[in-house]
Length: 110
Length: 115
Picture (cartoon, rainbow over the protein chains, first blue to last red):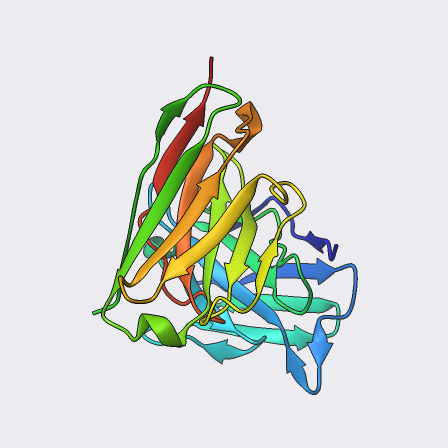
């Protein structure tokens, strides 16, 4: 199985930039597409798709969110961070079955 | 508006069975693969199963393979998860999610396995 590694938590100040990383144990690119997706989950809510295929913004998601990376190293950036962004962020790969998730990064405000 | 509504959860004893349902609306259900994803209390997300739009292929996580069965009825816009030989470690919120990108998720249904 492909293992995705995320830092457990990140503390940033409002209006600053948050950078959340996700490293995979195997390459999740195929034919130029990165099969890496990012989800936001607020307490008591279901996850919401933010970024798909590495860098594509999902429908209705503010442009403050962006994704980058390829191969085995990926980043979710939130710039600037707003109070409403307090949540846990998960990366997920869909290159190979099973479709594994990272353990999540909890975004906190300094 | 896309909606996914799960049901069928509850408190069951170890070794028992349960069948979850996910009713879809607001999109052409028969055109999309569908997933089940679960989240144990205070834990992260775990993908557990995928079924293709036409039921031609099904994939499972090792943790549920042989015990859980994903299925769908396109005439009823409904996705199912049949869970057998339930264990305490299957206790979780179970979500259904739409499509290749999992761009819509239901609110989830809680399954508690305890004696």
